[in-house]
Image (cartoon, rainbow, N blue to C red; front, side, top):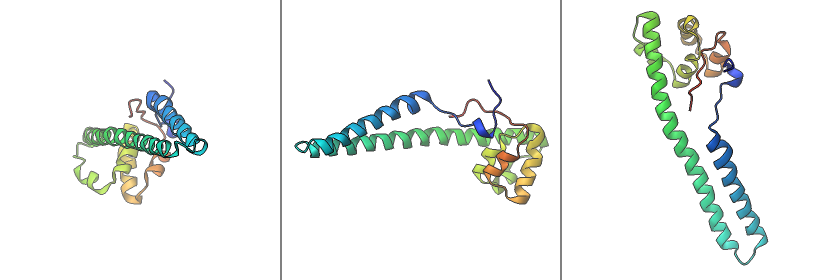
Length: 145
């Protein structure tokens, strides 16, 4: 696997991103085409289009919600364990002072950088993008949802 960094850390799920969504958008496009070109069945195709758009939206929101909720819990647990292992101190107080996006960004920092970057984040209130850009030795996550 190639090294993970800020530029390439986004991950796709091929069946969903490259099969389901293109297919649903093709069906929506076809349905819109028939709304415009078939005046006799315009109402039917309008209804079909609305249903397809709702299915697409619901599938996206449900998939994202379940996956991200679970992933967020795991990220918090991972950071609690890493911080405890590196500092001997619980992460609770630090965790309360950080937003989840900051915690998620910090998890990409190597063990050598994590404590210092966490302190810098607390002192300077760095946002997630700034935290990720500050990481010199990226700790890859090849299992992201």
